[in-house]
Length: 418
Image (cartoon, rainbow, N blue to C red; front, side, top):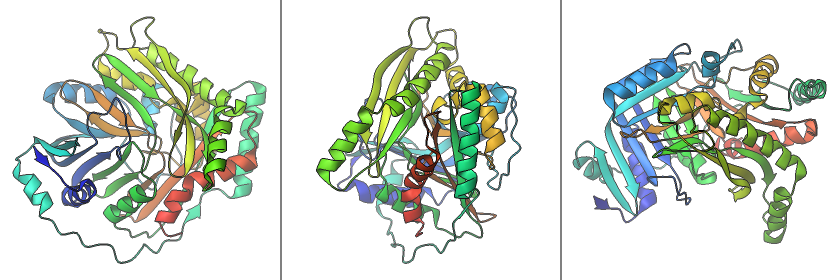
């Protein structure tokens, strides 16, 4: 154990230190209070052993991987694992080319809480190594041209077509996303993440490097976590732009809390999550712990609900993840039909976007986020991407949904100098 006088300085040095390795993962709560987080932030670096696979038998392979090692595992689930759990397919354009599932056992692992860094894997000398680093501040921002896969008109037309599916009774709600991208993009992933985390600090932020591929995430959303036998999901549905005027900002928060449309979106996903958790739960144990909670972040207020269950002793904890994946907040209801329409109406493969990354502990606890508000980058082909979306219900106004997409993209656009 070692006390760190300056948490932000230590975090910055630890990120730069971890990035020297070909694979690393940093999970950062940005000091948001959360009863389920074991550490304020955690740094995993370098690879002892790894699992890289695509949709087919990925979840079974992960079970075997965990059973063979039973130590700390860090990794991600790509959205297109939906093709493994349902009769679905993915044929849209994919310039990022991430695997559907990747996990690794780190050589080095540091957990940070209560002002102290603790080496969980590796030698204590790595703390001295980190503290001795001299960081050179970034001198320039990236020169990028950001394009959109859909024009505003195309987006609005697609939203209205999706509303026709709702009118026909095919679905109640669908999460529809669009891609922003840059080609020939040269960025410094570490500096870009540092700026993103400064502009938009969120409770499930993270940096994931797998060789030449990067996830730089400022996500505010937890997908699923396990503590003991308890499973917790915290879907976000409901967004309102913040105001610099404190009185107006407070009123916006009250308006979101009482917004019937946002509540309707949220409760549909709560019902979907309850159904997903039932598949791995002790009968009768699924409950809604908080409905329509309002939480504040730098750019937005969000409506978040909390659903929990007791894991059935006969179920493997990875089955709880499998049955709940992809998360309801990023699909819609009914889930399978919503995912079919997502494939039909979106023009980009989601890949790791709207998937999840996080960690599994040696005793089988886990914590995974939702990959939104995130920059995804393939350094090899210099392709940078981020997607934004929202819940489309029959009450949705296509113009307002488009504006909400731009609001959700605002922090990333600012970071990228656009």
